[in-house]
Image (cartoon, rainbow, N blue to C red; front, side, top):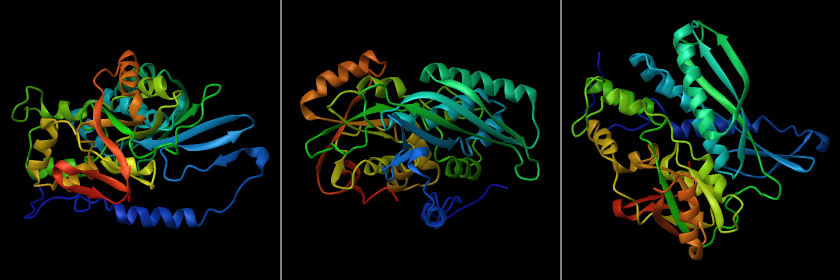
Length: 351
């Protein structure tokens, strides 16, 4: 039976309490104090960043891990798996790109109640597309049949990246007031906010086989669009001194920019027109604009903070790397946090 609510929906009311998650994570990390000897690698400080960094000899390696989340339940409902196969790659390599790392390898994890050959074949086709786009290798992975643990299928991966000779991680340390922020559009919802989104679809009894108003594409197909992969675009700028910071606008929405620096304010005063899909989602559950911008990407999937006197050259490089649709979305000034003035929004930080 569809769940009915009298008030606006939030991520917390859909079952995802980000504050509780932060407290639980702090508790977990509080129990981990072991540090191996330097001969086993030296972790580099990158608090709050998109990928972990470790120095091994003369090389720095970036490592990240993520899942597709409850988007897999939509894939299951529609019996379409290629898109979430591509997501497995995208959600991870984009986090590598956010520290300026070049993807090298990925290992996937599939937990399922039972292995279905056609599902796995479709996942493989999607993973293949993502790997080609990211220029990344699949080394292997883990498939666990755990019917007592999961009812459907859970998808995730871990990705490893490296820094070509002479490149340093892009951590946001060089960000200064006056820098400009460029944004590369998203491909839709990507793989974030689906716990809330699925609740809205259910509460409004949305027919996934029919288009939403103003669209010709079935809602289910539109929502399944895979995560856009930004690795080639980021790689085109990662060696440039004018590239001061990168951010993957994924879970947490625009607040992800604050992970780059807590010494400046990111003012998104040139946010482009919000794609109609997000307006439709907001109307489904009377979701507040504050909640929308901190849960979904709202049309921008990757942000780049660059020196102000290199905007034209930066955009030319992005265009040659397949991101000719990048545009200026804001600037950096004194202060802290992230704001979107057109909507009266201000976030103190990521959490």
